[in-house]
Length: 395
Image (cartoon, rainbow, N blue to C red):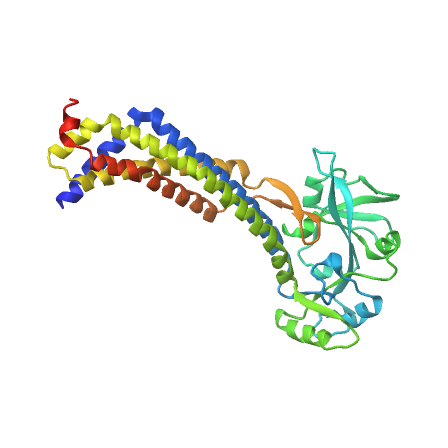
């Protein structure tokens, strides 16, 4: 009990005197806050990108591509294969019509807003069943395009990030012109980065004949997936692979998300070394300016462990303040910030919003506390080992 009382007394004394050392304490707080801002902001990029990709799709939808293709860009399906796919069991049907959309996926160059450099924006040719397959699809401005025309609808994310995609504008791509007649959203999924048009018109413009790249199919239920997949993969007339839509987009997000996270942790580790040295210098300064006070406390009977714990507690308290400030600033500055980046699987842009989640804030605060603990360890040991006679002679 005496040990606990001594430790609490010395710790509270240290914490109450922090305002008297505000200058040196501020160095540690600012350094740690800066590290937390960088760590949380970079990881929020990966979090936002992964959320946009992983929120795309449904367990009850299947994506059919050519066997061996790793993305829509490398897939190819003929009209005969598309017809056979739409006849497979397990598909939802509206009367005699399969709820499936054969689609074509191309890339067009459109500059990002605020720059003159072109970006790879995906244009998707769809069939009339596309909106029935994607029940999350909704027009928020204008109307749906008319099939058989050069009209298009643009995803909300694409409109925000790229030039000339507002309602009523005309998209010029080579010799082709497309009129924007509507803006759509799909609950924040990756489809909101796309431009949609009639697949037949897109086939004609890009001279693709009667070929497609994928078929997106709405199943009777999520349990119908195995039936649908097995019927197609065992059919010698088609050479296809069948994946759940959610699985396909989750796999696409892993490469870039891992890269961003590794970069974020690397930068934070390097900055963290600097912040730890700042904390060490701060605490060494605190110990040296309070050497007489610490020696007096030990001469009065306070044990060395209480002194050590009190110095560590001060360092951790400064780190907690810096971590909290850094987390708040990162949330205010970056949460919900709209941007786009390259999806290396399809070499096209994906629009998404930064996501500063409670988990990231907790990670940032934990990292700050670790830096505070390391930064205060050596100064705490010095304070605990401070020679009492030499320190008292400074009185």
